[in-house]
Length: 324
Image 1 (cartoon, rainbow, N blue to C red):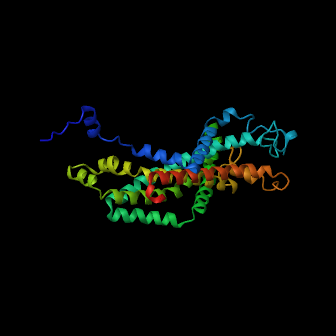
Image 2: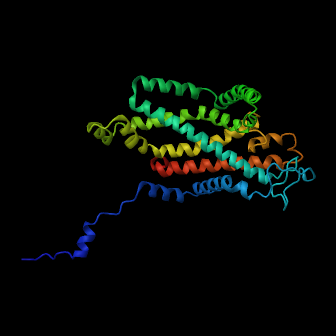
Image 3: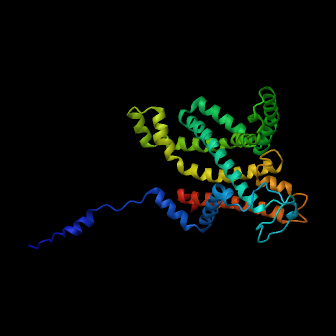
């Protein structure tokens, strides 16, 4: 009678040991790093954020410092990107403008994301009349031209608020009411957030409707979990993938919108640094001094392309089915 040999303990351990599982985020990161365009976009975005953080501290000149003797000079060793008609160093102004662009992009996207997540989650989870009302507001917001709506909000509010500050200074003589430079940022934040939340709300609503039918959500309901716990612990965390992609592309859109508003003269205005206002200042001189327009325009274009490449790479990494 033949006898069967028992496997060695080491072999038995190897046969019964479970395969090492790979995390979702680790797999997504490996997919992202395999995409060369996404890596390029990621590097440019990181450099942009680094310039926004430390740029003003390493800028060779003060972005407001004027030197008429060096006005409208081309790129040189002293001024890498040249100077503008007032003799200000363009490279330093680009670095300070990066801080403005990053501040507007991060703040606007955060406010828009918060509003969109709250309204979209409520609409997708509660459904019924709440869903109809939120989607009606969303459709109305998305049907309006975004840039025109931001221009309307900015121009309609800036003059009365500035007049109120002047009136308060006249009554109180408080010097705090004389500083209205921060008002440009607040109005731009509000105007862009007003037009940006609708896309996030529609996206999160679709994710909630899809995730709400899953078994683990039904199991949470069956054990008596309340609405707040289900949304915060099960629904919103599982919708992070598409939201990350939307946020990445939304930040690039916010930078472009801010530059457009500043270019039109209703966004961030001097003495605050903005790439859009730099473009507006060079309109009458670009034929004689093309570097005045080319440098901020190329900067905006490269940042936009970088966010697009990074968003597409994140989309392929987090949603591999869509890349096939």
